[in-house]
Image (cartoon, rainbow over all chains, first blue to last red; front, side):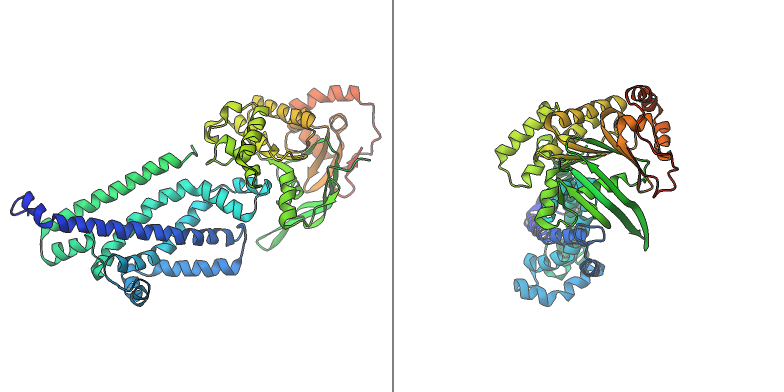
Length: 226
Length: 284
């Protein structure tokens, strides 16, 4: 391990690892952002159409619930393969960061939708009722009460989503997406280069810790509940 | 005769739970005159909160009519419904403040949803915080306030749209005795100075005694007794009323003496038992 010294190792593999960091962060963060963009409206719909919700709708609620569950029950490896034609259609390639983002986003949308649903369920019913008693309409209750009051919980979920997608991105790496997971497997597993495997692992652990800490800091800043 | 602030006629409400209908309110009628502080008292489960929630249509009556300032609002929907709710302030047992908004932003919420300008909202909210004695807490978060302070913020929020009616649903039930007194005094001042008619839902006779001028006793979804507070304390008719008076002994004994001295024996019907509901409505 580090046969020619750490300096030599860095010279040889530093650029590769750095590129891996960027690829992983790009995949993870861009797909997380897109997943929230699309998952929040879906989570809101799940919440308000549920029985006892603001706009109960049995058919829509059941349909959405079914779609979300289906999306969540597919193992990610399989999803990546199944989505190959769709990915090619959307971004023109199945390789690299763009090729990975499509399946990552598709996998994360139902995940985020359920998280949002849970976060919004934490908003006390009495608070929603108070807004109704003030004469707020459904759209105002969603934007000014549900999402706003649910924000600390939603923010807390960001770390969960990002870290989950971080793990998924390693799987996407197996089918040519690049990134740290890909490097760990190609060099460490396929070529028995334990030093590269170890370096990739350490970087992954540090990044995950940083993501979690950043998220905790953010939550502490925005959560005014207690 | 003045138009009633709130008139409820033959109101019934039933909920379906697990396919079984349970009747929460049965044929309730009462009239609240402008300027009244009208108490609705009953044990828990008597249907008091449901009754209040039928006034701003948070609950839809199953049968009967609700009139607000002479207007039949029972079937209001859309814009009309939202406008109606904006005209009626509501305060709750658990305060129900927006935890992610400052005190100022909580109070100006009813104005924000009506698209008032930021400056007008801020000015009105400041004015109301002054009224409830919390002008120094404008930038605080609700979690930084005591229960009594939170309820004051909730009262200020309920007043933001200059409502003519306020619904107070067990507003002091989560508060200690001293805080309860100060909140009740605040409500009475608002009633006197701003002329806001109040419907006060409570299970405590002491609350009725302290601020209400009229009262209806609700038992198992029916009004079993209505009248002035003085008469109710002096000559309770329904069994449910006497039970509530016993439950709140301190308030009862304090008043019975004074009320009895002040009120000559009114025209009274013979007493009934609360269980024979239909024939059991005592109006004085």
